[in-house]
Image (cartoon, rainbow, N blue to C red; front, side, top):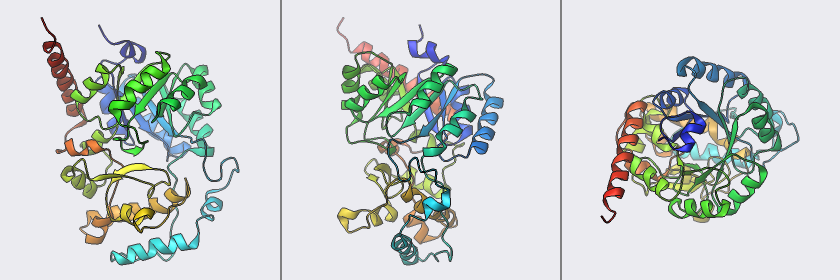
Length: 372
């Protein structure tokens, strides 16, 4: 018998895969899991193109999207143009970045660009309108309770709404708000995360919400045996992200992939240096520069920090791929502590297959451990 969550979402295996790459999303869905497109930094037009491509490549199989519509962020509700919001970045921060680049033998740009922020914010409604024009089966939100319009639209379109949480009290608030699925994401996770470990958080959340909605375990899960551990604790499946960054289809910058493959689980850090919120990423001289408690510069609030950082990081990635030593020292990306187990570039379908095989082997070990 399939787990109930597989029946609910029309999938063969309860493996949910978050990725900013449409190819990964489609490959996971086609392999029997559930692909989730990270759509936060997209424009509505770009999102429509990406979802149309996925529609053409999954043959009606289920997939979803993930947005970040935080409860609090700079400029919320002010309907500011990107240039107006960028104008709130202090000159001394731009000067600090210019000095940091110069120290790494990278010529600062004469007119520094400002990039898109890693949140949907006031564009959330527009992105949702696009998303619901496609046959998505899930809409997920991070960094707080989803706005009412997201939950209402989900109900109207028959699309389940998920929320990522890093503490049991957050899970209770999400259920009270009406979400359909909780992703209990431990501190081992890449990207925005809290401070509680996955091993502790999953059972805490399950006890706190008392079976009100299904729960997916997340945070550092890059193998089937870890997924089996989450299910053994009561989770209905796993939500994964980092493991897809070293697949053949992934959008990850080439030098960053090599840094991932060489990294240990101790080579990540929760830093505000990329988005303004604590987000786990690969340690580098960029994260060192934004560590206020260790002599680094204080960061800006969300979304100003990402607007300042993203164009610089993209340029760093390009130079790093060309062999620039200074850029390679600065290069970083969001990744969880599971990076220590990510040691080879593989096709996405193979990663899904290995998840299934490893999961089955783990459940068999659990079964054999029981007394006769």
